[in-house]
Length: 264
Image 1: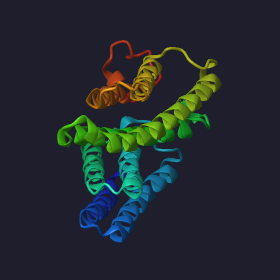
Image 2: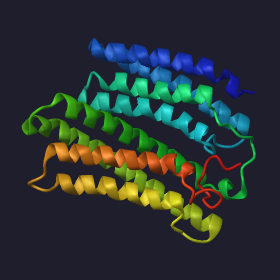
Image 3: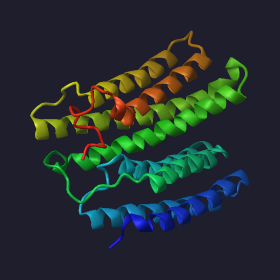
Image 4: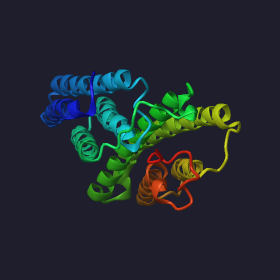
């Protein structure tokens, strides 16, 4: 049976392959970039799958387990962006960001036992969290692109083409986060008898959703300013971090929120 003690070996192999993919992207060797990145994703997902079998539940209960999925989805989102727009730098940034989350998991895995509380045994639990983690990864890549544009692009007109690509990413991320919220509502109805209760996690999820919706609507305004749009996107990502793990430190969530991952 696989255990978290073996995670480091899968992580090293996956990061090594993702690094080769990132290098190949810079050297414009797209075939190697695809092959290495997909191979790394396969290695990493094999560990997730084996942990799923070993735990006899989806590894989604704790912050450490959700970071595992985030580390997987970042290079996946990176290779999707690379295949669509051929940004040479995107695989480097997605690999670096995945590496950071892998390191956090190595030093602070936050892994619990096989047991799931009754509420988490719903069939909606796994799709809700997996869809959310993919949306978070897409928004993470979008944030990297926004930072790159803020640093490298100097004039408003130079933003137009990259901003259109960025919009596409935000549309995808918002679509998945909306689906995740719907799955969560169905899960809540089954587990607690109501679709929405303004739990701290739900409140921050709604705030995050509205922030990305604000970006999309602001971008549709004829008089919008590209740099302000990018700043809105960065603020939305900060709100997403609050929704994901920041609520664990809110006094209002302690002992009352069913979404606090550190709850035993």
